[in-house]
Length: 359
Image (tube, rainbow, N blue to C red; front, side):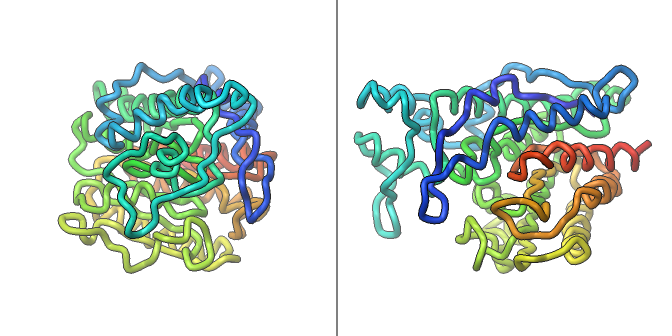
């Protein structure tokens, strides 16, 4: 297994977010990824003779991002902090959060000159602070995803790893073609999918096991048949991001039948969750994918402060083994998980479950 770690992830460190009507410290913090790195070291997972190797990402070409995200959206992200400071130098001590949005019937084709209005144009919630280092961290995260794809399918077959991991934050699966939210700015799973196609894959599957629906990923690929999207998640009638993720969303146009949502009620335990997982795995297998991207959120953990499933740490070992059972190359992107102290154990348990199964 090759693990590509984002060297700049801590550059994105939000001060606060709006959560359930209150201003609170951010749930998405650098310590999440640091815990994974610490657990990898504790288990000597990437030590000589261990099952994995740790790498820094290769340089990223913007053209790959533009296969996923609209250029004007990327331009906004790249320049947003400079514009925020230009409004008032005192803004350096604050994060930027949106406060106005274009709802149904409003125009979105013309980008306003007003910074707050453009920030609202490209976002869908008030819980995703944009900071001085957001663009740098998100760019390097996408580089990790692209590097993981290149390693998975590039080069001679005998040299390819069984699995790769884009170990990065901020996460990505809520970011859509031209919007951010849910702590996500660039959709790393989507970048990885496009990079796999560029490496010669004919079909790719994205399996999202985060507690929250991968609304950005679904939106990006909903009209395509070459990239299957499968998501098992909390029922959007009660769980964030609310407005996508229902079972009747099957894709549109050429992509009809290539999106599968498996919503589950709050309080779902591992046995019921695993039955839904097996339904998703069967659909992935039927797709005939050359590789599978796993949007790995571990906010399905029973101790997660903002999610409501009941998985225990040992269940992630089983998840890893079930994923390995597909017999396909696996690429993981790190998504949610906000029980920070347990983050490392849960993520590395998935990786260990994969490696034990394929040994």
